[in-house]
Image 1: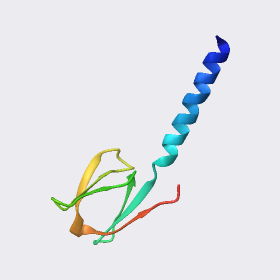
Image 2 (image 1 turned 180 degrees about the vertical axis):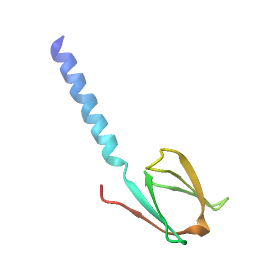
Image 3 (image 1 turned 90 degrees about the horizontal axis):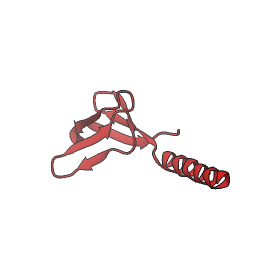
Image 4 (image 1 turned 45 degrees about the vertical axis):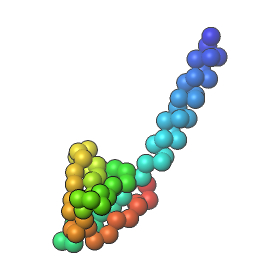
Length: 77
């Protein structure tokens, strides 16, 4: 019984570390010189022209017009 619990716990921990490793922060540089750090990769909606992202500082999902984005790049975590 103890062995089964240990194996399950190790498997769960390994899964969580794997999932956490896939998510990387991104830097979105705006045309007015600001840098926004996002939690994960921003999504671009080609129909509306908006970029949706989760702000790494506040944890809130926000949007910015694609015309205001100068550059998006992955950060080294």
